[in-house]
Image 1 (tube, rainbow, N blue to C red):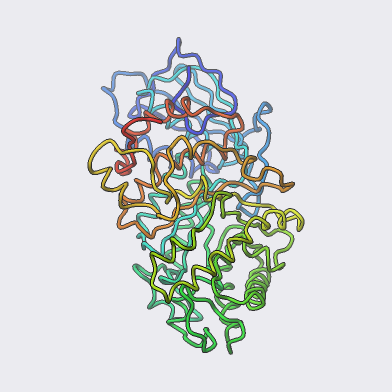
Image 2: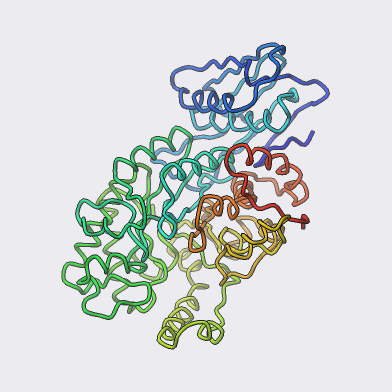
Length: 509
């Protein structure tokens, strides 16, 4: 049987000639106190599923802590938590009882996600047998831009739930940008007025973090410095050192008090992070002199380290030579990235033409960033815009007029549209071919320039996010046709769980 499981498990021995009936309304869950979060999540999932007629026998679901399965290799990469959990687990299905065993709560939660998918997609009639599973990579994430579109806290929690379903374990929140500053600042209250929507307080972030941890997801907060800082400069004009603000803005470390601003802001974010890392941004410092950029990045890295946090930073930061042991370089500029300067200038007023030249100059340096990370011995987090930026427009046609209207409106137009099949055709290793680097993990990214509401997010994320989840989790190279067949039953689940605006192609490619 090829069960409708995404991502595909490591070892599967299921026999659908003998089935066990699991009615969500007639399940008894047994677990010790250490597994209360996994139990609560599973109870919530079963509660939302439609119960049957009630004439099926009750089924026990037993959650246990125990040894990891010996036939599953341990994950490689770097975990986002302070202590790396072993997420390997087994799901054993027998008539009348399902047992999920793993060495820690996160492992049991991953097995519970497998069980929920089986119940949803097999109408409660489960094949008997065993699944032994575990991730290929320890870091499996999504970067969500909550500035350009200010997603509400309730919407962010829905994203956490989606990550849990597909065994992703990191939600990287892009919390500052030129458009605003979402996280409340104790040291610089003037930033609060720049928030484009609901201000996220420290208390809010702590509650969101607790919600995510209970679902096996680590929140990594990002402060984007020194570029992408126009909002900060509007609140505190002195940070520009009297220069005319660049198109996206940058904090000039030569300005009086600018280094203190960077130190204080990064320290706040580092202390707000309850995981292992804080993200310090560092991308696209357009118009910023290299010496100033290097000084600012080094200041930010030093502040994070002094606060006890190693950093994740976008790939441009490797040029500053500031990252050290324990830090991660996030490679995002895909090999296909190119800028047609003449065409770009034709779209913009003449005053913006120097900005285009700055883009061309900076992106020309990108091919050297991966080798520089390798030479420095820095692990890399893979977020290639070629296949992992989920705000790329769809090339496939949608199956109805509403979908076509959304497809025409959504997505960053500097990225040429790609088909779903093209977005599937990669492996983590292929993204760093020829580089001797340690892969920390895989992280998809969704930027929100074109998003106007939650349904737009659903349209861009699905069905492409499960591809990233499968590539990060599944060691076996799965085929496009197989992945599509396994994912097809999930469309009804998306409809039932508030993600019904997901993109539906007219013809599968």
